[in-house]
Length: 135
Image 1 (cartoon, rainbow, N blue to C red):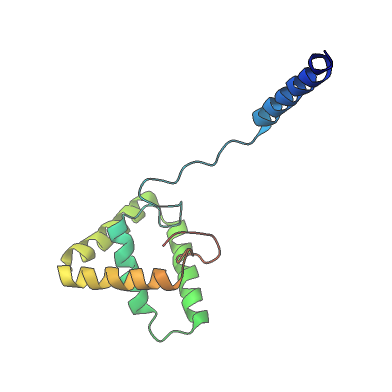
Image 2 (image 1 turned 180 degrees about the vertical axis):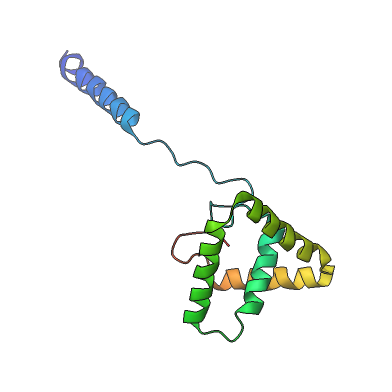
């Protein structure tokens, strides 16, 4: 009798409290896009176009100090942020044309270099340090 008068109402109250907390919980964050974009500043580029951009950045940054490299990347971020959709499409098309013009061996070498870079910099946004995953 004590069980039904004390414990059962306490259990019912705890279940109701749990349900109210669940109703107040914030919604889950949206799932990342299927192509692994993670919402980076280069979200408008395909994986091949990002790979070509990686190769260009690596070539352009040879001999730069860390400060110069950082300033160059920040300038490029600002340039992308100010681009119109049409300019972004033209930029992406240019990268795609360069990628398509490469031989299979050149593409494989760039992809190998990119994989090695990512392995040496795990889970870091290589386009904007400090913001999380990306390229």
